[in-house]
Amino acid sequence: MSEFDDETRVDAEELLELVIAVFERCGMSQADASLLADSLVDADLGGTHSHGVLRVPEYAEKLTTEGVNPTAKPEVVREGPSFVIVDGRNSMGQIGTALAMRRVIDKAAKTGIAAGAIRGSNHCGAMAYFTRMALPHDMIGIATTNALPTMAPWGGAERLLGINPIAISVPAGKMSPIVYDAAFSGSSHGKIRIYQQKGLRIPEGWVIDREGQPTTDPMAAVDGLLAPIGGFKGAGLAMIMGILSSILSGASYGTELGSIEEGPTPGEDGHFVAAIHVPSFEDIERFKSRVDAAIQQIHDCRLAPGFDQVYAPGDLEAIRRAEYSAQGIPLNRVTLADVRETVERLGVDVNAYEWL
Image (cartoon, rainbow, N blue to C red):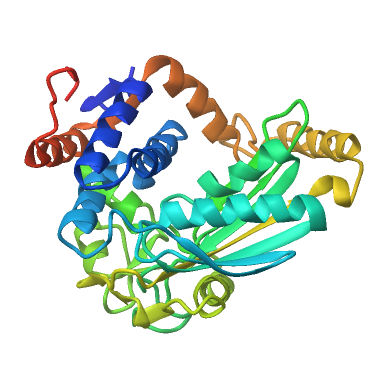
């Protein structure tokens, strides 16, 4: 049963097949369309619907009318034994970031640690998608990205900072790996869109209005500012992630990227990835055993009032991934209607998808 009455359970494989067809119709190669679609469906499987197929209409517009090149091929423009710089050539962000992460993983296996900077890019979705690529190689994955300025510096009331999320994945042994992926704001615009679609009030602490006052009104949130987590600490970390993901690579930073009203300038996004080869630092089995113990310690923690379980980062996503893989991904009617409109506009056959 879905959490909300207006949700429909959708088979992940069918959803992936449809989204691949959408992006192929936008002009992408089968390989690039598959990667891009997989990143969105993967986000939905983990319950991160703000970066899931809700983005299909937006991405289709980027690829067909808003200047992103569907056939662009990202290129390595500079590299050394432990670093790589990738120019996305105005491709979707997932394509160049995946290329950079694969190169970084190869290099870290030889040097112990490696990093990659990406420029000439666009929106790249949920960052955990890339950090989890490192896990099968006994590596810790790290990724961050710039974002349109939607947040004010601490004490300000002007959109100068992106929420610039960071993701980190850490391999474990018997436990699910630690997977952390979060922005330095109380929430993201994508998540606020989900609350708007469901007609729900926004939780306190997520947004301030244009005058700098807290609000839970989803309509006021659209014109307002996202609030940083931890006050000045979150705002400061967002600025640092922006520097890592944009100024380091030569991509656009902050207001150079565009505005929430007018959207980003195509091909100006930047990202940053890194991989740490654990066996270069520590015996891998001992490392994984100690990570397991750290996770178990979290699970065994004495509960605060009102809680029935303590979770480590990535636990809830792993639980959802198992449930949604077996029972289908819950998608709300607005998301499905928006996807259907895009599918029909592009002339993709929908007859095989009864849920749409």
